[in-house]
Image (spheres, rainbow, N blue to C red):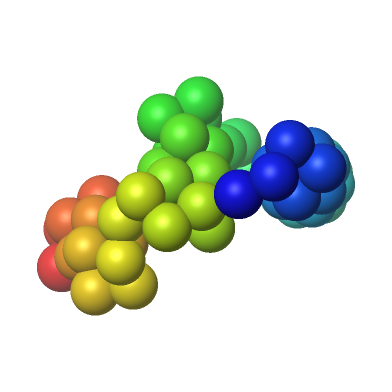
Length: 58
């Protein structure tokens, strides 16, 4: 992944975080890190979904 792509992903995640926080919720640094790992291909979709389900207690 190029540096420019990574910057673009980080900007998108920052915008998403701001939107979520405007609604009164909070995204932890760990959750944002997991999002970055998913969009950069460090973890696959199934692993990401399992992480989300575990966090929700499912």
